Image 1: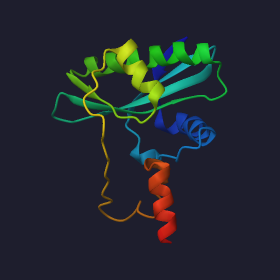
Image 2 (image 1 turned 180 degrees about the horizontal axis):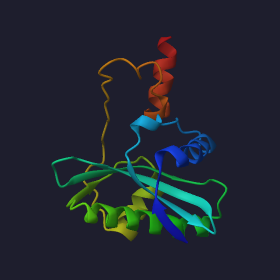
Image 3 (image 1 turned 180 degrees about the vertical axis):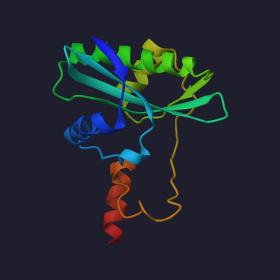
Image 4 (image 1 turned 90 degrees about the horizontal axis):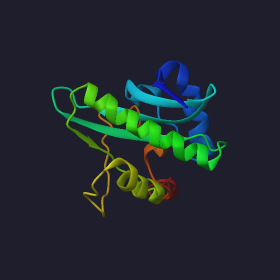
Amino acid sequence: MQHRLWNRDTDYDTLVEWWKDWEFGVVPKECLPPDGIIVEDEGNPICAAGLYIGIGTKFAFMEWVVVNKKAQPIQTHKALVLCIDKIMELAKSKDIKLVYTATKEQALHKRYQKYHKFVLTESNVKTFLRDLDGSYSKDLEWISDDEQIEKQQSKQ
């Protein structure tokens, strides 16, 4: 398996395909971080993760961890280990001291603690977003969970 930095322009279609396969919303390209990792096996992309870096800080946020749904489970496991390890190396190379992440996915909860030395810091979190100019308010499914999507649809 090989890893490489992602390219938002050339890798975006692959990420969109994966998000749709998992029935996730599609993150707008301009909202993805410029820094991210793609893991491939024999030229076939298997998983990816992004890293938002707090400019002027020692803090980063790992987000948009996603796998190719068509990949084999053992291949996916190995690729995720490599991907997250490489995200940590990328953060260290940029002099980051803390990497934060959030997910509702139980499998990632276990993975982060077992393989990547993450410490669970919060258990009951609600997330909020403010669209400053209104350009995204019509479609926030990409960042909303099923419960919030259903609530928004029932208001319409």
